[in-house]
Image (cartoon, rainbow, N blue to C red; front, side, top):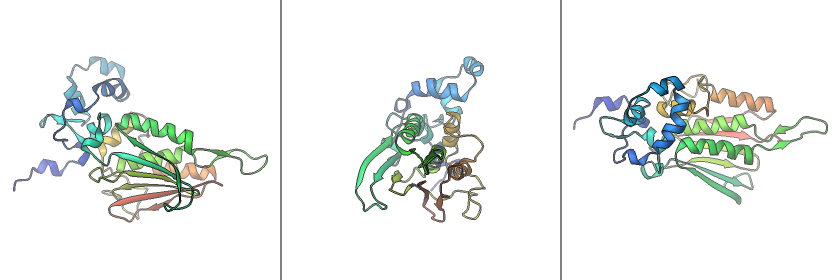
Length: 255
């Protein structure tokens, strides 16, 4: 059997999504939403490349195979789950402290990440971040600080193993939030050096999410989340980081 050695050096997100075509991604979303956020106006005005070349420059298209990459499908796909069944975030709000308790609300975030990440942020602001007054005459704090929940949820989106059919789980219990994704710590990142070391399972997706402004470009998302929880007076998060095929973080409610 012949192996293409070039593929061994590529992460999953930049591999060609064979069977897909240019029609499976929203070109308008790429042109009107992504390009202006990723390239300065002067450079964009001078860019005379065709769309396939423009997409390929960000690793959203494979010129050789003449099809979008998995990153292109995830970021701009008209139906990403047709090609990547696990491309979904499943939110459930439970009334108790475990999954055996009744739940009163659920929602699925699926579709292109360019749109869905914005919807997730809006959802967190409207439904998760609730102001509480711990003591009379004190200042308001959040049940869960926006920065912490956003950073840790987007971290799961960026680092998910999209070869798994399992969705990202975004579960809210009466006393905590749990966010879990398929795919353990990756590359140079090990339990003993997390979160101080950085590596990326999906570098093209990571760069795209940064270019869209959903995360910063300084690789400090987890540290920023921990700091936001501390500033809010919330308990420190707990990370289940020693599992080879999954990653879990628990964010505890500020009471």
